[in-house]
Image 1: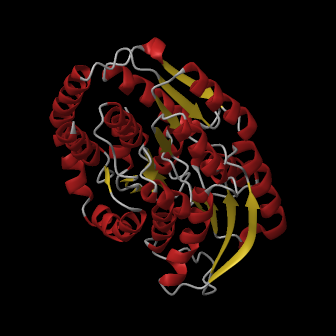
Image 2: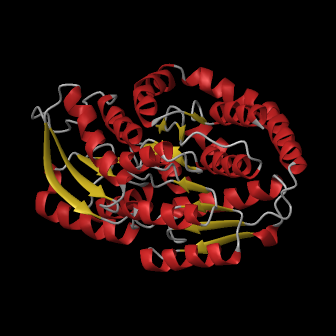
Length: 381
């Protein structure tokens, strides 16, 4: 299974232009962010070649992984999956890929239960309790509130059920507890600091470094996701930090919470444009759904992305990538749902086979601009 995971990881990295998964710790993932970003920016031609070469390797890896998983007799194993909210665009991609990959590994469809937490922690906690009562063999959880991780962990581990957290990372203290208490708990996901940094780097790579009006500073607005979510916190901080670390002066004109929602973001950006007008040079959004809403507001105000304002998102949703290609969005950051969902499923299998996991399994993001958007669109199918 280790060999199969390695092959899948290498293949996913190639397809995603260096967006791969592998065991690491948070600090290591953060340290790797600059190297991964620089490599992607410097060698778009090489990443295109890598994407082409990945096809054969991906097929071989999937075949071998499925064969090894099948030998572990997974058909009768029950998997419970909790998603914080089905209406989230990115998590829809994630859960659909997770379902498909679990089936390819040998799990029966009827033994894979995926439930919608409806963005309510009480609802999700009840779902987790129901899974425990029903006797699932492993749980994969995308928590509504990362701050509830300690409570969730205790509930699940006391029932002697291994746990794989996805997408929303618990804090460092909680992850350290898994290690010191030797718990069968791991987190699979990308380090959101890297995605924020890459947003800032996309601005820095522009000829004017985001300073459209030439006044010597970059004036921006920030549209945040869920303020309790560590991804929102890190993307908010590190997108701007990338600019200031490069010596760019910045000015925050507005910072609002859009809760990952397109409609909320549209309203917030419309209000900011009405108040600050052309003083806004960059609109940072913590995800692409909100960037899509921001674009609606920008166009309604008669402004043009790339001329009057720059617009950044995260996730590399299909529509956002199409907008990057057409110039309606300055850039996004690929949040590799394929590698993450596969790595989460592989981690679940390793728990079921007794192999175990490290407590952190990290993935890399990839900057998406006009230079490589065609490759990203091709990898999305």
